[in-house]
Length: 320
Image (tube, rainbow, N blue to C red; front, side, top):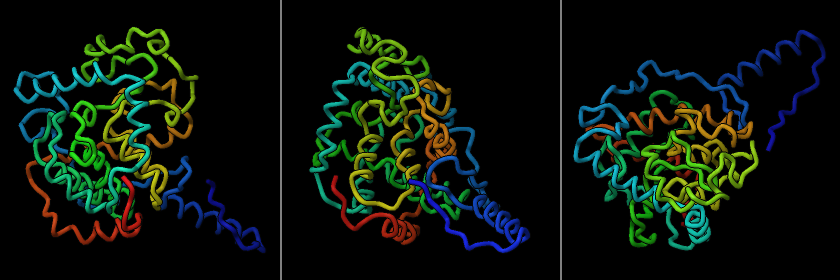
């Protein structure tokens, strides 16, 4: 969709020049919905400062240490890399894309995160509702005027309800952990890459080449991603009416695809739109990855603000 701004006829060159200045100023402070937009700079004087170490006193996303937590995380990745195949993801996407599990509102789903802990996360053992609010509040500090970003941060992990009985009670390896493309060769930038050796797709000539089943530059929207909470929440947001900008759905869908914005892996699959959306995803990952802390958010205190955003961008009930 392209947004066209209808302008009144300008009678003089001076007026045209002033209109151009005003338009430029407006674009510096607003999000343009179709990609190619300038990124606003954080305007808060008291922005979010990413810590250097996680709640365990270690560096963030350290998957190769000797702690018991890191060992259990590695075991989860072994299961994930062995079992996430093209056909598995296609099947799950078809089943859950029907959105026939539950009908409920966004806030109801947020409350379900209270009992969920992400077994793939080496940085935090708090419930996922705390992670949701820590991410959202961090984004809010840096971009107080981009309320869509605050809400996107709040809901980005709602797909983890797949771990609960009403949503199929899927194993952790089918819900959490980094996401990655299927149908083409597994890039070495993926976490614990060695465990792809036992994935059936790794020995399938249709899937184990650089491009695999895809054309170069096909765009990530045409790529089958590993199944998990990212893809599920993307399907929910896309399958229900909402007022979020398209880049918000891009963030939800690819926020766990860490090689995408950390190493530039899979560039041969990007479209021009992907490249533009990556600018926002790169901003978002700071709040997703580095806001994790044992300093908890007072949910009741900030709840009214996020309820107002939910009402602004989503209907009262959604199909899940």
